Image (cartoon, rainbow, N blue to C red; front, side, top):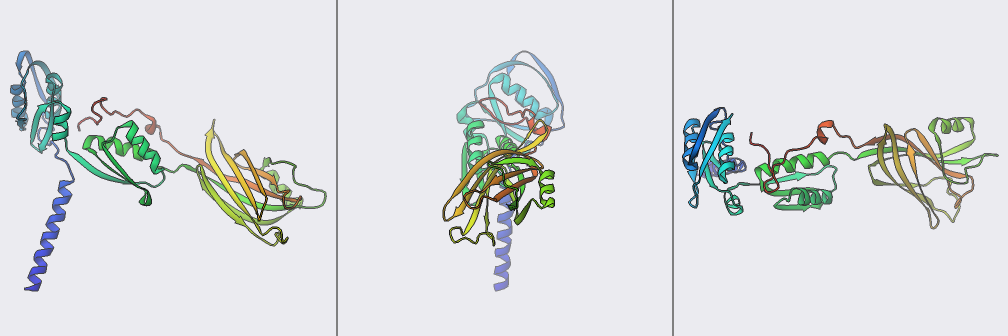
Length: 342
């Protein structure tokens, strides 16, 4: 008896999950999808009769809203499917249709009230990998006037409730902006200049090859080497500590580096900002445009007149867009954002 009860419960759970999966998909009109509809109504005729005739030709059952108001229309229909034929008539008669089954539709007066009553809504969640959740929120609310939107910042998740057609547009927009923002990878050296060689008086840049030659010639000593990768317009933090910080007044150095990569006329560059903080006090802040394969020498006079920071841009990749990403996207009319029926 116990095993029989377990089996029955399992069947109920499986059936429930199966129903949920089917219920998540709004009705789609599949009847008449490959049926061309061609005829002309020269003299004004009842729109109701035209709908029924299209349904008869394509095998689609046509239902009418209880408040449906008929009108007389003249129309020329040359459609590749029943759905396109229904679209032609509704545009002429000021009506609205929506599938209720795969072979049945309901026709109603095109009004906001009827759309709210008949147009199926979908709830869909979008986990974000790269995009700022606040940017996505602003984009969807201002651009497509999404009906219901909620964000879960802890999970980097956007949940949307809207029509099935508009959901396609929403997904397109999210996929367009939820991509890597580009990245910059730096090699970072702490160097001590020796002999008559001294760091520049102010931050300056040089080709990375020139910097390597100076290293090989012994013009300075590399005290420590680090690497830091930063996504576009983000901040990377690096704590630098070593035997060169032997003075009691200085315990170490913290580097905050922000980089915004871009591509200007085919030249890879990054707007770079550096904030050096010496413990327990002292700070050096500076910024520059650093090109790929360029080394930025930043003197550190607050600690040692011969000490400098060498930042080399080894990888600069800006956000990538395909030509198709920049093509106009059809979204319907101001009052009805959607996509063409397929």
